[in-house]
Image 1: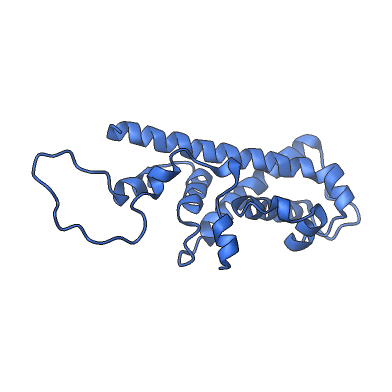
Image 2: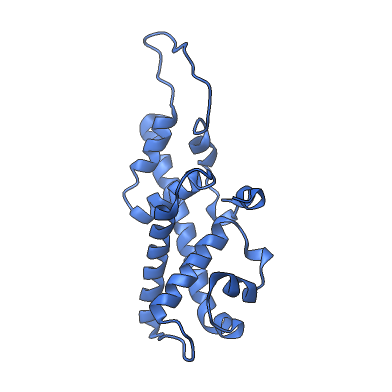
Length: 189
């Protein structure tokens, strides 16, 4: 993966976790510690405890986003399943909103409403994870993401659904934060 992109991963303000440093601590390569201390001492929190904080999250899309934020910058980890789970969640949320708004598939567009929702979800999550919004014009974002809708039409009709997805993504990040804080509280930290 390109180092420039790798350095941008997870830097979006919407995805910043106050517990991020705690989760990251000890999750990377380290040397073995043979001196394990004296009996009767309070056990130290290790990488297994931090991993358990994510594993105990019950809501699938929240757990998937947590995994993406924690391990997604590791180029050796295949994060496609977690990415796809968040995309499915965002797609379903958009389709519910389209139903509530009685929004149909765009006229004169090669995409069905479901396909458009999926493409917008992928674009939104990808651009948010890598904090790419300021680097591309709206037309560039649509072209990059394979969305065949004129930029003006997108801006007037479909952009609000992207904004809702950003809110949903931020809500998932807040749920991650809450779950980790609750876990840490149970550990007595």
